Image 1 (cartoon, each protein chain N blue to C red):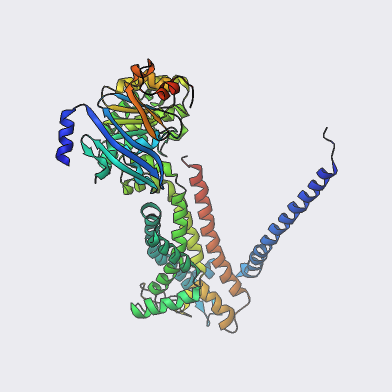
Image 2 (tube, each protein chain N blue to C red):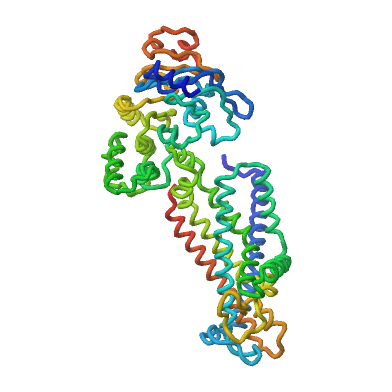
Length: 289
Length: 263
């Protein structure tokens, strides 16, 4: 009854072929990640130490630590978040919960998509024109952060919208049917159930922001500063630019140093990504429907 | 306009909802045309009819659910306590007076307690002791209290289908509504629970007006004081439930449907 026909045999052969093909593609995908991480750890691991993280660079950045750059990156990212998260989340809530489907919202959507497609160097020049010069912030943490904030807004809006959209419409209608206003519905039912997705999106955005170089190098990141920033109107060093500088701009840097900087930068991003993943797993366990 | 409406209510004091010449279409396709009927205070008003008759569309207009769906167009007049709801500005107040129960229970992603406490909270009641009383009363009246009183803080969505439907009813009751609309509430509910809910409805009728959409003809017979028969987007007949089921019908189609000859 279950004797193999020639058709069965051929199907099975094709099945195996495709399975192997897809597996190979997947393995191919992991190779660069493994090589990058492996090289960084092998060549930069020895540079990493507590001193490396918490002391200033010395000898024209050929020795010493990276503390001003590490702190600068954290500051720039934090200020960028403070600017982009309220704006992006509010816009997403408007688009998903209030706006109807009309020409106005379609233009806004188009604008968001286009904003996401603008190259980062163009954002950088926009930042110089708008924040450094027009608003007169000068090259400063504030200008750099705002430039990054504009650049990451589309990501925040899109990911927030996706999270809001994942809350079933039936919940909203049940709430409206009780006489709740849109805002009451959003606050009591929609947001509590979308917040995990929103936060995950934001953390992912942070990790992207941390690595950006072009948008900050003209707006607020300094080549070398022997002191720490005192306010958001000061310039600061940043890990990404520092990596570029010690890799290509300064002669006589020991080989391990740039790898060490890159490892710290990647470590920072991976750390935030894993927090995001852990957080999502935690909240998914508490999913309410 | 308003005066005329007020005069109408005075003449027929017991009329809760007066619908005249109501037509509904979705994206230009008519779903219901020319419905005129009155729902009286403290009655169970049954609406029967096969699928696609326009029953659900009809009740959606009563609390302005048409605003949820931009393709849904409503024409005609609906007077609720003498006020035309199609021209009402404050639809939130209207909706809070009308409890709605859908075919499939929609347990909000909240605890059992919060499902029932949500509507009072929306009205500004935040006192724990007051909420406790409301939650217990509503769950008791929905015949659910004994089953859930020990786990009020667990999620509503973890309850069984029949329990969730009673939770939905408790939530509707927490609105302290004038009108309770039930749309085929027993579809996902076992027969025993259905009977329990039907008993609850018979009690509730003394306090509120109930509109019961059902595709179970016998359920309308058991519960409804008056019944309307909808077919293919129009209201064929409205009459005392007793009369309809005793064959006193104006239209042969009503009798055929009740006797199960089509639909």
